[in-house]
Length: 307
Ligand SMILES: [Zn+2]
Image 1 (tube, helix red, strand yellow):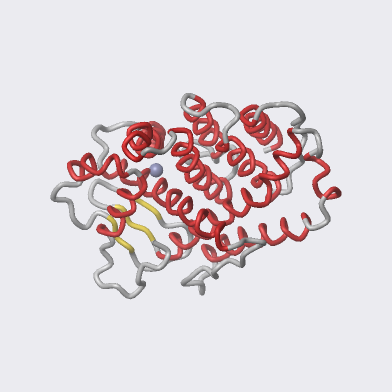
Image 2 (cartoon, rainbow, N blue to C red):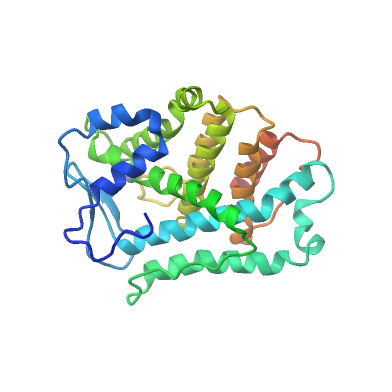
């Protein structure tokens, strides 16, 4: 999606996004066909303007190219946080490392967190600068090619989450308060990606925990995007659930399907830790001996406390 041709005319990208939705949850293909039967001009790229442009009404979803690119850059930065911090998360659990002392334990941490912050700031600058039609591609940290392939899949899922949320605004079936509509849009996107993961696992022969872990990572990256762009506790007048509430909801939902010692929880913990590090917030979490799931929850509690 990152490479959608900027010059394409008209800027109807419906087919590309239907493909994205289908790839994100192949088991929903039939449902998707029914939902979007006869629909055209659903996803449109509008002209450029400063700020984050991603909006929906009863007819279409409209976004700006730079906003899509910013989502891409931020989700990739979230994937870099997973790469950087999943080892530390594990080491903290087995008692080899105190997370609050990461910087002194690992001399390269200062360089990496600086690069991570600069990638996040790059996306924010791209949204706010009048001259920036495009976001600068981000520099790899210590990523190898394999990581890039894996992260790319999850970044696609993050983009899918953002647009599935918008899709629900487009197909909402009743009048409701703005706050409720936002919550329902989140629930729709979460359910689209996670609600039938078991069916997909069965059909494809994959373990359900792994399917949920991958899709959950995609959603966690979307949360990293949201947490980078908005105050963690939300802001007055913004009807969206706060980034903290959205993260909490993701963890609660995945708790129902994925055992507490699986990789999703390390990923979630690393994403939350990444938010703490990028924002330069203090880290006060006792990780020793707790399960992966407990640590993700503790880190989220810690984030809520210092936000
Ligand atoms: Zn919304």
